[in-house]
Each structure stands twice: as C-alpha cells, then as structure tokens.
Length: 194
Image: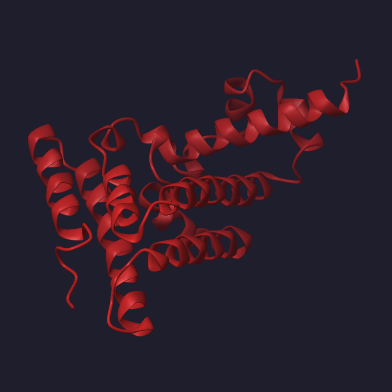
C-alpha cells in the first residue's frame, strides 16, 4: 500500500524525532535501525525509503535537534539582553533538564559520540553550535566583540558542562547544586569577567 506524500513526510519526521530521543538516551551505537523503526511505530523495511543509511539518519537528527535548540534560544533572545541571557541560562539549566536522557540537550548528551563519528554529523553539530553561540553572543555583555565572544564561549561550555555533571552524578541534591551554581555563575552579572 502506497502512502501519501503528507504521510511519508509525517513518517520521516516521526523517525527523526524518535531517533533523536533514542540517540540521546542510548548513544549512536546503543540502538539499531530495527529498534528505532519499531519505536517509531513503523516497519524496518520502510527505513530506506527515508534515509540512505543509519549515518544519514544520525546526521539529519543531529541537525534537526540543533535547529530546535536555536529556535528556542532565538525565542528567549527576543527579550532584552539581560533578561534574554538569564532566560537562556535558566532554561538550559532547568532542574527537569537533568531528568530523562531522551529529552536532554544534544550537546550535553552526544558530544563525545559526535567527536568520534566525524563527517556530516560533526559538520552539522559544528554549524549548530556556532548558531547557538551566535545567539548567546548577542545577549552577552562585554567591553568588546572579542570579550563578548569569549564570555559566550565560556558560558556555553559551562552550561553544557553543568548539565553533563548533573547527569553523571547519582545524588539528586548534588545534581541540583551543580545546576544552581551554574545558574548563579553564568547569569547576566555573575562571572562576567568584565
């Protein structure tokens, strides 16, 4: 039975969504195509109608996840610069962000996998990270363009690091302490270095 173009587009979007969650939860090598398709409610045989390979799906899902993050950060950045930075930091370091792995940030959950994977996946991640950095830089204070960029890079690295650490520890109070410290340090005034 042939599916409509609209249904095919919905199926593709569903595969990307499920893959993105499953990759963040299990890593790229932690789940195969058959299980991804089963979790998407589709047949294994339909996969190759949408993607050339699992690597193709990994690259597309990484790109889509980074675009969703940029959309969210752009929405938060529409506030004034001080409010926008606080909103981005607060949103990124939300306590529920340290909950389920499948709903975590691609940067925090998959950066080591991406570094090992290379190729188009790493290119998509690099481009997405640069876009997020551009947004963060636009809401970061500093005495010069160079100072704003350096602070934005340090803030991004600190935010990602705080999420990684909060995920890795098995003490919820300590995990929350890490997130609280990140929010306090990377907010608009604290840790500015200016």
